[in-house]
Length: 204
Length: 204
Image (cartoon, rainbow over all chains, first blue to last red; front, side, top):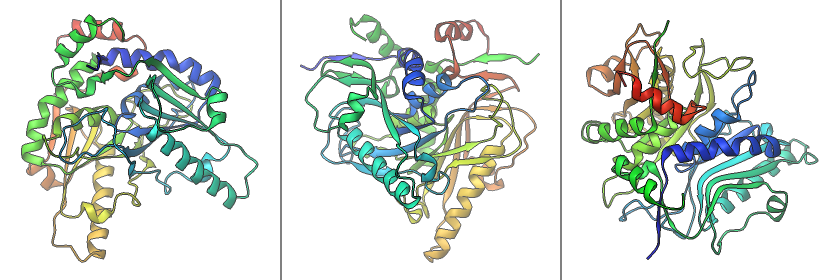
């Protein structure tokens, strides 16, 4: 039986808050890309803590990636599917891709399970930026992608991240957990009961 | 002195959960549009409760609208600015605008303060859909926009919503509050203290 882990909103909040100094000091992102829907909540919280006084908020762009066969099944955050579907991508009208060239971009999601979604996101974003850099004649400028997730599951991954991203430490998981079932609060049908379950467990 | 109101994550969660049946029964949205960053959290929570068993999740598209002069000021959710800036818009590549024609679309944000952002969102979305409908020769089909916000401030509004949206009841605020200062949890620098303040207050 797979162990279930319950995560409260306040735990998510604190994970983001605690990660913020390291993100600011090592990644220094000028843009966040939230993978929806799981990345929405951590990205919004993170924005509060990445803001430096006197500076503007770090903008968030949301992209929508879905790894799951949703038709005919009940919503399960963790049920791995086989392919990634793009439901939203960068809005190239508002966000000039050229603005990304040479910048530091933080990709945010809730969980790194099979890594398939993250692999897709990094590959496609790198491809788009490379195209924009080529068109602008700015191939010398390096765009750095980094990743923040709430949880990384310590398991065999199907997806791969670029070697230099891992070697440079541009991957940060607030928690590394065994291959457990994670119940995030935004899926809870009884949030009081959910919080009780979270209190009773030994790992968070 | 403006009264400050503290809202906990669990209150936001419950507001979305409680609003879901009415949204499902009266608006029956087939798409959500989250106004970022404030709409991210309620939209993600709402998605859990708008899902019917055996049906796919209602997709979320995020748009980014900013009403605030951010440069040189500290982050303030509520400080009204004078103009709306578009930081992200619908991704017309992934989402065919044609898919919106004749559908019911729920716009989600955290707070309806001066109504300027909501007016902008509704007007621009209606314009885009009207263009798409004209191009597709489908002007007979009515696209219905509805709005869900966590809080509506009972005050003089600068922005206006379409008359038929209000008359048809396609506007839902989980709470209507006086013109108070709302502290949402995602801005809290001390979430435990924030929750304590929320417990001590008389209105939520």
